[in-house]
Amino acid sequence: MAVADYKAPSTVSEAVSLLASAQMKAKVMAGGTDLIIQSKSQTAEPLLVVDLKRIETMKDYQLTDEGLSLGPAMCCAEFTALEDVKAVYPGLTEAAYLIGSTQVQGRASVGGNLCNSSPAADTIPALIANGAQCVIEGPDGDRTVPVEDFVTGVGKNCLAANEILKRIVIPRPAPGTADAYLRFIPRTEMDIAVAGAGVSVTLDADGTCTAARVGIGAVAPTAMLVPAAAAALVGTKLDDTALEAAAKAASEASNPITDRRGTVEFRRHVVGVLVKRAAKIAQSRAQG
Image (tube, rainbow, N blue to C red):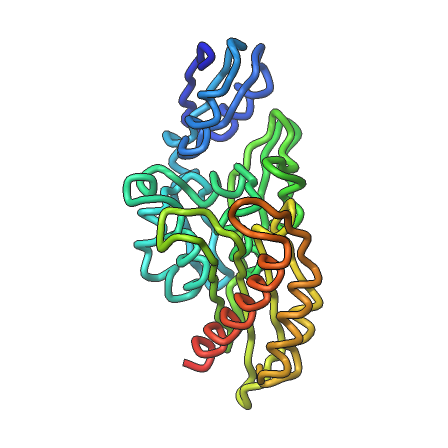
């Protein structure tokens, strides 16, 4: 592991300044559960670690009539215990609950999971399904990026070296809206997704789907928004025909690889099944 210089700023602006003036390779630490593992393979190159856990605004949240504004460094253990958030975004809460063990949950965060940018990250499809926006701060001010555009490749995202993800903003769901997230893993727990699917649906008084968003993960270099899968649901009562069409669209949109955890064909099939099941759960919640 490289020799590391550790800084713990108290404001986002201070953290941005540290990154902008860094004379060595710099890494931001929101929780550290991935950073610590990655640093074990680090060369002797010096490393600056900028810890965000002492910035209060990075760990708080506000839930209003407009939606949820989440500090990216709030640990998952705290996030998943927020009953008011769980009532509005149950699928996102489910996704965050799947990150690691009980011990990991005490450090890992939704923002860290997003910025680590793994194709198999659980929270990203759920964030996509909920139309989340990433508020990014850099030396030149703020910019906002839809979460489906934030991740740009395997382990890569749109953050510049001197930028920080400072908020995750999720709009308040319209009346009759609910979400759900499901994943498939080879084991019963403590594994990463072979495929994942987040679905949000809006139902009118008659039970017809008037809006939908579908996000899939672990079946392409990045988690993806699948407009065709959502379009298959809109205008229907989420009957079997509509669900099969959404599943087919998700499978066709995927671009997985074959590895020891699953083949291309298996992943394409499974992600379609997960979209169908998540849509039914979201429908049940919206009706409830």
